[in-house]
Length: 289
Image 1 (tube, rainbow, N blue to C red):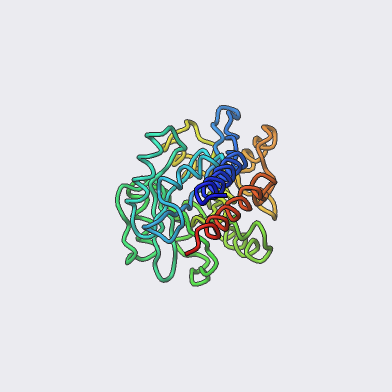
Image 2 (cartoon, rainbow, N blue to C red; image 1 turned 90 degrees about the vertical axis):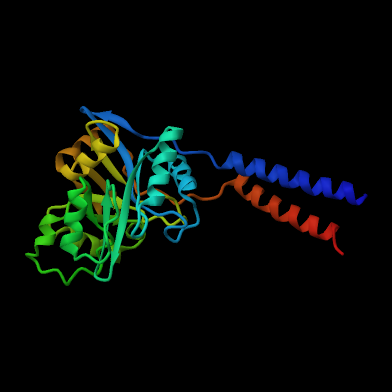
């Protein structure tokens, strides 16, 4: 076999492997539906992208991945900036969704706060209370992120009353009892909107932990209003959180409520991986110098 023929053979294997991988990577359909006059939307409100935050995906790729996972809405929340979220929101509008809400994760030494629905950056030099106020002054929603180390807040702290929401389910809390219990303990300290978030950094599936939002309209403002008003349902390994009436509606409507399974590679995916490795090995073997 000539060198050219060997190269063509290796390239053919690579093309077949790519085709198999494409077929294996089928998108998840949206489960959004009308429930008693509400638009029930699957959302993830703690999503990062490269380069504004450590992540493996760009803002545009993050939007595509969210759509691929069947999410109806995400908040893109770069650390201490919003430009990447604006880019993601622009791309989502251009390409027909999902809804992307501009947000920020304010990363101060004593707290991390998610602002959803922002028009300008909230400085990370503000106190916890002032950061909450800054988010809300913009018409946004303030959600405390991964509240594992918030014991410094007194039981009657005004910040607990000012917060709109708290992450009560996260990806790690879906696979381990200890973080699930700690999130549940903080959630019991106030009257918060229940939020489930993946804290996506490009590794693992976006929306692995998610929030069902009951919006009066499927729009950015409709979702923000629902978060502010506590119209959410979140499923975790330890039960369901959120508005009791909406929990009942969600059950009647048959919203997906099981803890999502981590995606496992099927036969086509393995064939794709093996094919790519084989094609690369053949190319290197055939073209030694």
